[in-house]
Length: 625
Image 1 (cartoon, rainbow, N blue to C red):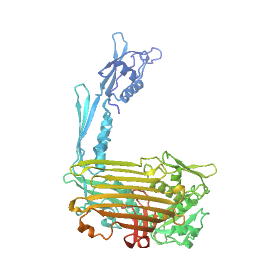
Image 2 (image 1 turned 180 degrees about the vertical axis):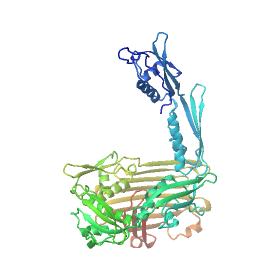
Image 3 (image 1 turned 30 degrees about the vertical axis):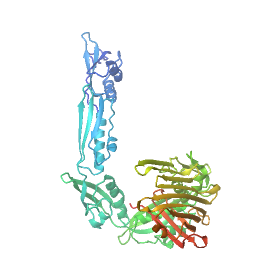
């Protein structure tokens, strides 16, 4: 929007005696610039684009003013006509320059990250102060606080002149109290109570103590009105439900507010007929089994199912049919749900459901490409891929391959979703893209104490040794009274086979000064080998052997007499079964973990003890919210 005024008189009074037409405007003889201090007159005249010696119209003047404003250097621009004593035309460009922004500062954020708030400021020091950017910065900070529920936030913006003629901008924030929802009012609901509707959304009024904070969040409210409420009503047959409006009525005195949601419920629908169109790969009975909510004999029969429509059940049924096609190579298939509303003879509203299927042709996997693995060997990644070139494309196997590669935890997370390259014959190339991350770590420390001398620790760990997925770990703790050493090595594919193995060695020496408890020395190790359980990628069976010996020396005679063995030893043989379907490692978000282990200690194996041990551990992972 232009705030400057343009005034120019470009006509010459008079007329031609014969035609009575106006004379052509005189040419521009010169240009003068007034009001400038930072920019030179030549720079401003050039930016205006007015050519000396040429004639101009009011459109030329408007273009010049727009050009000067678009440079971002001026708060006001005017162009005036002036005439010399000799009748020559002079254009005067009168400007008001914007001050140079020297710096800006922000203070006050406590509950929100200062860095996040600063990111909302779009001012650039060293340039002319952009009033539009200043307004956008203020609006951005305000919207950020409002989105987090801080409706009482006060923002003071001060533009302060500096000694060199520039300005600096100060943003002062008083966050105030976060708005708390004290009550949720639902208007327009007749079929369900306010309590039922409020139970379906995530925005809750504050409750007793810590159980419900009543926190207001714009994003959560948006999901409530756009997704949660329509889904909740849709699952109960109200397919035409809509949220008319939502508003928050805050009270700045106590930081609380009332959330008002206006809805239009509509009428309840029941399912009429169910029809399948275009299915050749799967029979009606097979697809009806995937739909689950309708008997096979009623599909396409024209009979009315006459049960309450459930949006969630219908959506899941469509997803199951879509997945079934994509798991058998039909990646170009289209499963399009259609709903036809009508009123039955008894006046009941009915929804006729139809799946219009365009199957296309099945696609085979031509190639599987791995891109971006600069450290990790390709074989390690391909071991995690369960999709095989030459087979029909399978969506579930592709997703499982993606999850397996992510579970390696060698690459930046989240991984980009696989790329598909369609070939002329309809087959596809699948490309998994990874970005290596630093996987190993080293930690060490040392200390010196009176009476204990020098002590410290050293730790080395690399879960992707040599880029081959092998794991190595070394731990050493040393001091005048302790010396612990542990070395672990594991290989998930010995000599690139399906056999896995691990070995662990340890040696620990400790001296107990207090109480004359003497010295204790432990040493030993273990060896474990694993095989896939009948070729499974998620289940393995392990055999293990371990040995441990403990010596107690230099203690008091009474203490040594209590030990029945010196040294004491233990020999262990074990058999275990493990099944692991977790996804999202190292912090699982789904899947299960099962471990069953049986150990025999001593007995025929020798050693001090003789006992058996059975361990059973199972875990299931699922998101909490």
